[in-house]
Structure formats: C-alpha cells, structure tokens
Image 1 (cartoon, one colour):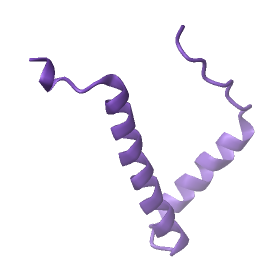
Image 2: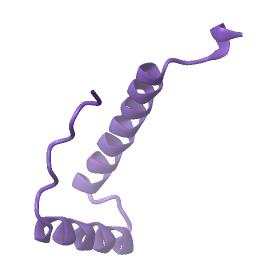
Image 3: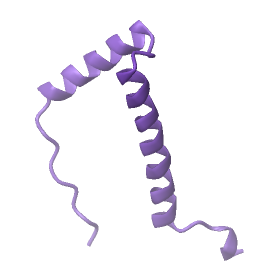
Image 4: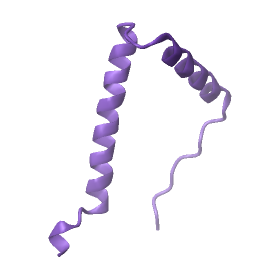
Length: 63
C-alpha cells in the first residue's frame, strides 16, 4: 500500500515543474503578443500590486 503514496518532496517537485512549464508558456505567449488584451491588463495590475508590497520574509525550513 505504501507504493501508491508519492513522497511529499516528490509531489512538491512535480507541482513546481508543472507550474514552471506553465509560466514559461505564459511568458512566451506574452512576449509574442498572443495574450488577450484583458489578460494582459490583469497581469499588469497584479505586477503593479506585487511591486507595491514589501518583500516576503525568507521561508524557514521546518525544525
């Protein structure tokens, strides 16, 4: 039964890989001007909001 369980670290690595690939596709489409205008406006608004926020503290590893 343990063979069916994906280790937590592996699950996180898999999720990050998928997310990184999706971000790369989005960035490529954005650079090529293939995103709809409303999506581009949303992304610019989110980027502006992120720039206005103070940087997040570094994440600590669990003890």
